[in-house]
Picture (cartoon, rainbow, N blue to C red):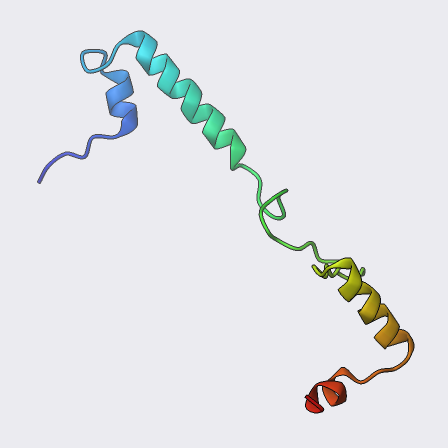
Amino acid sequence: MQKIITTDDILNDRSLISEERAKKIEANAQAEAMKILHGGKREGAGRKAKGDYALNITIKVSAVEQDFLKYARANGINLQQLMQGC
């Protein structure tokens, strides 16, 4: 059975890697580990926070379409019935 060589083994054996390179690898590993220490909601992670507030809904339409939607809602126009007439 082969012995598994870990990153720590390589960093500790200075015949395989220089002192300067080992320090760079250790510093980068520490920096990466600090990024993932926390869990839960993170900015830009796409997770929604739980709470008692309503979600914001974004409608991507032109200004004319937005005006029509506001008019239809204000005047109680049933869009399904309107589309059946087509």
